[in-house]
Length: 440
Length: 75
Image (cartoon, rainbow over all chains, first blue to last red):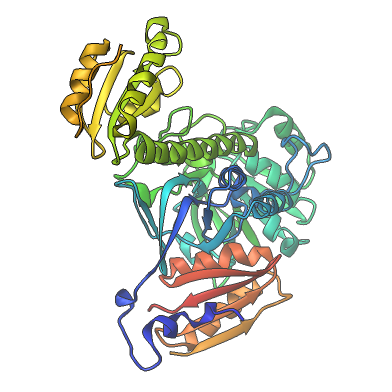
């Protein structure tokens, strides 16, 4: 039996009515929460799931993201015959499920990235986790023309040819835009519609689409182009009937009677809930470095939501893989750092060396001898700065190799670069309960 | 607070959205509408419309390619 449908009464009680804001949210814990179920988020989920992290992916509606808006994908490797966007994303989803990733279909209301435990809040839950991967992608841009909002949501304006092409069989449709998406999806629409009128902002013959698509479109007998135009307004009754285009050169308004209008004028990032929490570009894309770090420890961004050059499924997959692996490393390091390096049981002696620095490397056996001499009073940890720079960063100290951090109760009490035997014994003898004689 | 099921299985866009919009009008604030759908196109417009309208939305994937869109009427 599914208990899903009980939520208003389940938490409020059958007789007791509590205000909506008062309803207690259920708190759940995960290792990683991934926000967004597009190509990058699903890839990150595959990597995290396969690394046996307890992983939750939150998607606000249909799994697969923007790729599901594309009718045919011909440039994703591995599918020489091409594959539908929805079909490809179903395969991604299936693969993530195989690695035990949990899925939740709802939108994220807010996030809290401060501290080691991150919080991701939906309207019924608070998910606590060690790392967050943001793959929230983008959404189609709208023209902002008069009456546009009146005809969204199946009242005549669409952003998805794959979804609505069949409903436009033998109809007249308009396409707004001249980029790859507009021209390729416009050509796809000609398989159904009797006429596809394309509103292009540029001069005659000029498009933003790639050259091959442009030539094919110009030669397509069902396609008609209206150059130098933008949408001025949408008109009609319940359903869209007319798109009024404006000629940018003459200022003339050109009414065009259509059954549907498809807008392909680019995307805007879904980053509202990350404002002031993550670094963003002027256009509100999240800025990351090449390993998808956002600058907030444990928070990564991948896919179209990132400020980057090429937004494709294949690049989103690369981003997602990196973010997944980095999140995994971050979580492992956090555990090693808290439970081993900063342990509280004994006096700690953290020796920072570098694998490529012989003098510091050669001191390792002596450090181990000293640890052994103190029995169970001292715990030695070694950090190879060459490989474990991030562990060094967590000690919040930029040091040279051959540095010792002394800790007591999990807190650093002394930092010293004196690595000779007498100095170390002196220091440890000050810290331990039972000082010992220096060994040879 | 009542809970209403709306069966839109087997129905393609825009029918699930239109039906859900009509049904939600009849409901009171706090009521919950559960729309059963099995066309992925409705997964794109139905939740988005309901959220834009200010309602709370959560979706359950009941089976491969079959969903229940749970809409709590907020206003």
